Length: 426
Ligand code: S3P
Image 1: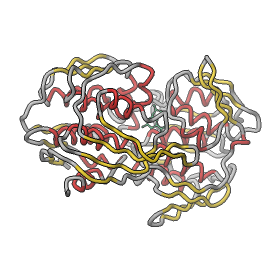
Image 2: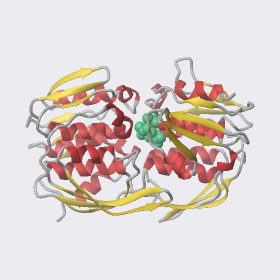
Image 3: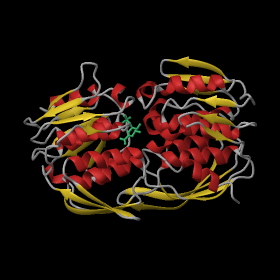
Image 4: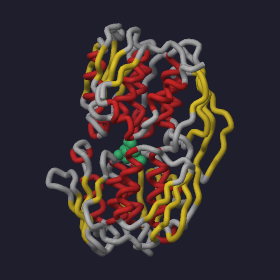
């Protein structure tokens, strides 16, 4: 579906966003392996989280979907049963990778598949370390899905993570949580730590990085949780508000976990007026209300150490960068090439369409020049974050524009268009 966007010169109002996608995946999975009933409020309504639920249903877990909460009838330690067909993870890397960790410790065979995009994404990054733990797991010879997992004897491990990826870290933690003996994971570059927080894992910060300790003692018990709103979805509206005149928005109860707030820090350094109110902690996760005001932005240099923290927000940060003083430049971001699309290519191709001068590198890109006023049709590349970033760009362009295959936004935020419309009814 081609989604057309008119120019919007002001947004105003309060925005309610569904629960964080990363936290929702984990809450659903941890509730499914716990022994008993858990209650999850404000779960993400994304297609990705539905992929997780669908896979867990095939493993025998039951879910009761209510208006304001999901009840999960957890199966308990190794309580899953052999699925009678393949587990389809759709577009969701988090589903495929985290569930591989859980399945590596079960005593039945399972096969994980995904859609065309997920079937091209690298899986060796989880297959190889899980094999080191004794898992009988193999990917297709190209290192991609399908993944086949057979029963095996899992053993504890002391392992230095080779890729700065929360999905790899979490897959290993979820395998190790089935063992009496302790495993230790050493993470040199911090990545999102929702798994550690929700499972209450002991983490020591040392000069060699974070040391994360896991054993069956950390196996989850049934729980209740209200998931804070998704900061990655919020980022699109924050940038839209900063870049339109006389705009102000309030986004309540947003997840402010320090491994995710890099986007706010960078936008503030760029001159963005973003205030945090009512900061508090819920189940170990920081939460607060975000107030945003129109601002004049200037580009800043983006350090290597913050890249894993902002990896999902680089598409929308680069849109902010083209309206900011100076050139937008990002390096050290090769991981963008293995996301839902090759995001460096997707961004560079679309920015060229917008009339900018684009210098593409292996691990990033630099943008200069001015956005054209010509009405443009942008490509989403079937990638939700590319679609939303260029949806925002269209609304900032004088004559608007369009984005193709826009329905892919359902992967993280099916309500994007409706939410933007609500912010123009003031
Ligand atoms: C995620 C981790 C990140 C992120 C993805 C969600 C998670 O991926 O890009 O959208 O929930 O663990 P990597 O762990 O592969 O960097």
